[in-house]
Length: 64
Image (cartoon, rainbow, N blue to C red):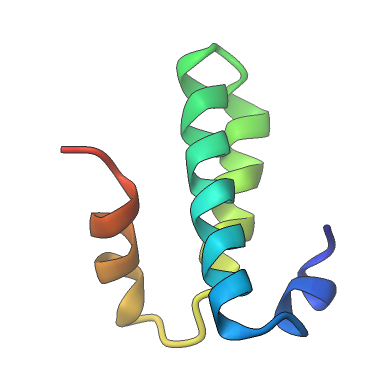
């Protein structure tokens, strides 16, 4: 889904897409598809409107 379409989604759906992109990116990286995984992670990070919120979003999305 293009980022322009994601931006039009309601807040809860955008958040769900963010976490799905983060999870998929992590899975792909662990599976050896680093470039594809990074594409997913970058796309998720571009969804965060306030750069200061990125750290908080990552802390929620990345397992301990």
